[in-house]
Image (cartoon, rainbow, N blue to C red):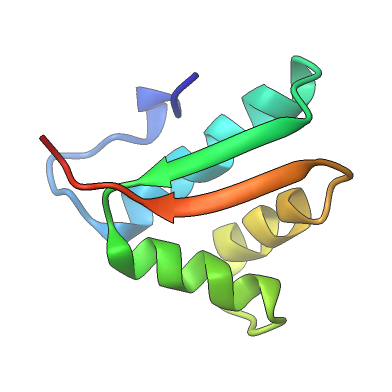
Length: 83
Protein backbone atom coordinates (compact mmCIF):
# COMPACT_ATOMS: atom_id res chain seq x y z
CA UNK A 1 0.00 0.00 0.00
CA UNK A 2 1.27 3.48 -0.69
CA UNK A 3 0.16 6.99 0.11
CA UNK A 4 -2.24 8.71 -2.19
CA UNK A 5 -1.03 11.00 -4.94
CA UNK A 6 -3.85 13.46 -4.25
CA UNK A 7 -1.40 15.47 -2.16
CA UNK A 8 1.40 15.37 -4.72
CA UNK A 9 2.93 18.59 -5.92
CA UNK A 10 5.66 19.57 -8.33
CA UNK A 11 8.20 19.91 -5.55
CA UNK A 12 9.38 16.96 -3.50
CA UNK A 13 8.89 18.68 -0.18
CA UNK A 14 8.72 17.17 3.29
CA UNK A 15 5.18 18.52 3.62
CA UNK A 16 4.02 16.51 0.59
CA UNK A 17 5.68 13.40 1.98
CA UNK A 18 4.04 13.95 5.36
CA UNK A 19 0.61 14.24 3.73
CA UNK A 20 1.34 11.04 1.81
CA UNK A 21 2.32 9.26 5.02
CA UNK A 22 -0.87 10.42 6.71
CA UNK A 23 -3.01 9.30 3.78
CA UNK A 24 -1.30 5.91 3.67
CA UNK A 25 -1.80 5.41 7.40
CA UNK A 26 -5.47 6.35 7.09
CA UNK A 27 -5.96 3.90 4.20
CA UNK A 28 -4.27 1.11 6.15
CA UNK A 29 -6.37 1.76 9.27
CA UNK A 30 -9.63 1.96 7.30
CA UNK A 31 -8.85 -1.36 5.57
CA UNK A 32 -8.25 -3.09 8.89
CA UNK A 33 -4.47 -3.37 8.55
CA UNK A 34 -2.96 -3.39 12.04
CA UNK A 35 0.69 -4.18 11.30
CA UNK A 36 2.35 -1.46 9.24
CA UNK A 37 5.87 -0.64 8.13
CA UNK A 38 5.86 2.99 7.00
CA UNK A 39 8.77 3.50 4.61
CA UNK A 40 9.75 7.04 3.67
CA UNK A 41 12.57 8.28 1.46
CA UNK A 42 12.86 11.52 3.43
CA UNK A 43 15.07 11.21 6.47
CA UNK A 44 13.75 14.60 7.64
CA UNK A 45 10.16 13.30 7.70
CA UNK A 46 11.22 10.07 9.44
CA UNK A 47 12.90 12.12 12.18
CA UNK A 48 9.85 14.39 12.39
CA UNK A 49 7.50 11.43 12.86
CA UNK A 50 9.77 9.76 15.40
CA UNK A 51 9.89 13.00 17.37
CA UNK A 52 6.10 13.17 17.21
CA UNK A 53 6.00 9.83 18.97
CA UNK A 54 8.04 11.50 21.70
CA UNK A 55 5.38 14.22 22.08
CA UNK A 56 7.03 17.08 20.19
CA UNK A 57 4.19 19.03 18.50
CA UNK A 58 4.48 20.45 14.99
CA UNK A 59 1.80 21.72 12.62
CA UNK A 60 -1.73 20.56 11.74
CA UNK A 61 -1.00 17.57 9.47
CA UNK A 62 1.70 16.40 11.86
CA UNK A 63 -0.93 16.41 14.60
CA UNK A 64 -3.11 14.18 12.38
CA UNK A 65 -0.21 11.78 11.83
CA UNK A 66 0.49 11.81 15.56
CA UNK A 67 -3.13 10.83 16.21
CA UNK A 68 -2.86 8.03 13.63
CA UNK A 69 0.35 6.73 15.23
CA UNK A 70 -1.49 6.36 18.53
CA UNK A 71 -3.99 3.91 17.03
CA UNK A 72 -3.87 0.37 18.40
CA UNK A 73 -1.51 -1.18 15.87
CA UNK A 74 2.07 -2.23 15.34
CA UNK A 75 3.77 0.58 13.46
CA UNK A 76 7.40 0.77 12.40
CA UNK A 77 8.69 3.94 10.74
CA UNK A 78 11.86 3.62 8.69
CA UNK A 79 13.94 5.46 6.12
CA UNK A 80 14.54 3.93 2.69
CA UNK A 81 16.63 5.31 -0.12
CA UNK A 82 14.87 6.43 -3.28
CA UNK A 83 15.77 4.35 -6.32
